[in-house]
Image 1: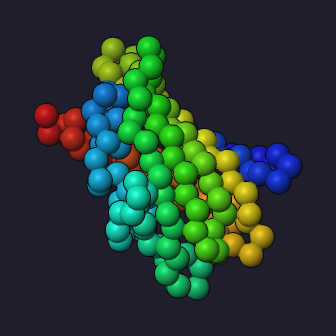
Image 2: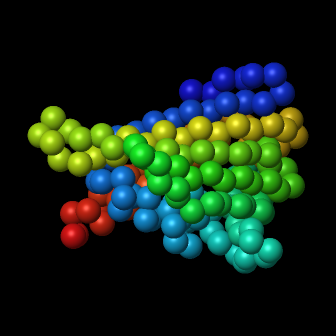
Length: 153
């Protein structure tokens, strides 16, 4: 749920994924991870950043420069950090945590928590509500990809 904290807005969304955190984190380590964001397509890579494009308000293409770190293993989870910026977009940093969450039957699962810190919504092609919707859809896409991969194995 978005919270405005001074000039920055914090958006946090969570989801349980019916796949283990290790295989879910592996999905984020490859180039296809960018396509998990709704409507985003990879355009190029420049100086360690990826240039992506998406259509937002008024069906006009918007480009962004994205820097994403590979997932890092901690004792209890995998954590990946990223940031993006682009003309007409709020500057955003994010952290995705994938923790172990077994279900009642003991099957491995993942608790995914995505936290975004954004600023510069004024004059942006993206508002707070649309960003939260995109974040929820990203976790849904990640869950779908991880669960399909898990069931295929």
